[in-house]
Image (cartoon, rainbow, N blue to C red; front, side, top):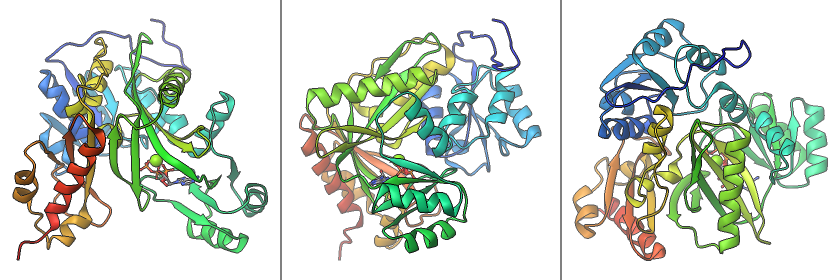
Length: 394
Ligand code: ATP
Ligand code: MG
């Protein structure tokens, strides 16, 4: 393959176990990537901020450091034969640097677009992919225009580094918008029209370097305080919506030339239209249930795509539900959730804990998954098991 200065890319080679695969980022997504890679016999490591992070705890090797610190990145890239990321907020420059010597997936362009809401919205508009009405807000004049044109309410979102609803404010009046924009630090933002959605859906796709791609069944997501609370798959939507969600997600992956796993979040409007909310160029919280519920999990797909191996099947072996375990639960349970009660009440519950030592409100500590031929019942059972965690015996 020829190397150009604009699209530097290492030659695509198939890596087989026990090759060393590396993930940038030490959170739970990195941890589950590493676990999937290890199961397949790869030598899986991480570049993480500390050796206590969820991913570093389970990795076969780790480098402590940040991706924009060249010595750390160099040491990481000297060990990893191929590189992926667990979050999108890695500098595109660092990814380009890695890609000069190692297959690096997703590539810098995919990250560059999806790590910034302004670029992501422009990408959606350019490709005529349906999304909520929005305006760029980089100063107060643009803020006034946005409020005048979008109506009320509006949600202001910082262009960079938002997750789990952080960096977002819902505003109803121009005064609130001015105050909200100040509270967000007067940084570049996107103003989005409020969507009165009927449901939130997501589709995880995996795409190989040869352009082959698979989409998982569309999932139904419930958020609480802007944080994902539960996922049910398949979503109880009609075949047309289900097909359209998968088609849009695959089209987005193709337009981004994304290699690896990518997730598209949607709003389903009351009149049955799908609007793309956002794109995550990586496995997603709503795909965690694929570990038990799919023939090949989203994390194994990430491993396969990174290694250049054929993708696995995205078919569900059973309908399933996942509920998140946030730090709040530890607080409600006096610091000690009742694991025995939750697991004892329902032997089909799968427990995942991420090894985080300090619970905090809103912090994702783990999740529960339940498979059941009836997706609604899977959710009811998962919720019941979660309730048992903090139902203190007296
Ligand atoms: P995450 O990374 O966890 O997906 P995020 O911080 O990137 O979250 P968004 O997905 O943009 O943020 O928003 C979080 C949630 O807030 C959405 O899932 C939805 O419930 C609500 N929300 C966001 N934008 C809108 C909107 N325009 N209209 C109605 N609700 C919205
Ligand atoms: Mg989101």
